[in-house]
Length: 510
Picture 1 (cartoon, rainbow, N blue to C red):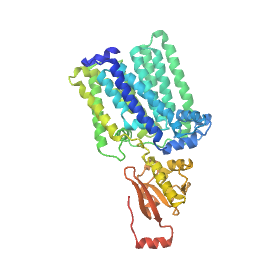
Picture 2 (picture 1 turned 120 degrees about the horizontal axis):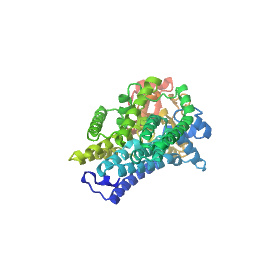
Picture 3 (picture 1 turned 60 degrees about the vertical axis):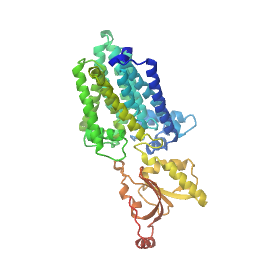
Picture 4 (picture 1 turned 180 degrees about the horizontal axis):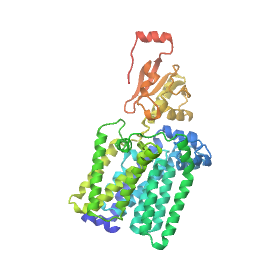
């Protein structure tokens, strides 16, 4: 594929190209490593560490207890690492951090081998500068693993279409199945990948190897089915697949993906226009690519089919099985597919346009979006956990100054990170008085209350109905962007205080 480096008359030294890709990869990995080290643990990570990692390997794989938050491969890898004797949170994040290397490597391989210099560079930048996608390589969740394996699967699929070597098809299915074991949302990818590879294998493989090809591909698929059948059956019967949207694929999945790619904390109408513009550009370029290059058996065709039928898979399941549409992190599997379709389609039409370098504008926009939203201390889905260490540090110092243990209550979305840090004895002068059974309760004996002011209706948290809103209090700390507030002087626990409140009413609204 070396000749692709001179497409459109662009002669680029191969060593220089590799240096550019390597430099960008090092920068991105350093960013992810720094985040994995210093970022506070999030609610779902702590849930995994507390509830699933202590279970046996059999119960992890068998989904006992049955909770969708258990991402099999992620949980198993963390458990293996914890067997070393250390249970540091960085070890829990290490599998996904290492998956970022897999993601970066295979993104580079696709860009460098199968695409010309400009298109390959845009492809690489669009994939490695999505701030929301990068979030999950620094977390102890299964999404980063799934994305790494998906990029490897796409690489081997494209290689198979180009070189017709059946081992590439096997590798594509194998790492594709690992993506599913990392997170079940990637089933929408695998159930389309399998028939696509079987069809391509029937057309491309030597006739005397067809039966063996189908047998090996079938074995990989049946092995995956044997592992995931029981967890999926349990999840369905236990009604654990409750996290998603019920409107339509565009409103729930695509808008959600665009919203978080822009790293917006609240919904803006601009999201719709950005998404519509992107879809218009992608569809137009794809249609033109089929006009200028009518070759049917190609990487572009395979990627288009993957994207279309992965989308139809989610829609079909919604209507036939009643499953919800993917939202936020479950939509990430579609991002590499959209970018791959866009770039491989552009590759087919770029030679017909004089100003093909305009395509670089997309890379510039994506880079600006990343620089604007890059954060070393928070992630989009759990930004309410991003200030916990800072708040507890402040409270602990106050306890030291006053020579007493500070009592705290808090909104339940921040309970995971708060309790995790308190249990680590990092803040000995802070004590939780939270009612762990009635999580929306308010303990009037508390000295301070940590309040999260943004509703999370998908998980049943209504910030506006919290009891802390209906009592008098003073604000001592504010984190406006994260919607976090620390209150003191909580008043309203007895009739006398209510009489005083009516005389000195100073209600604070947030």
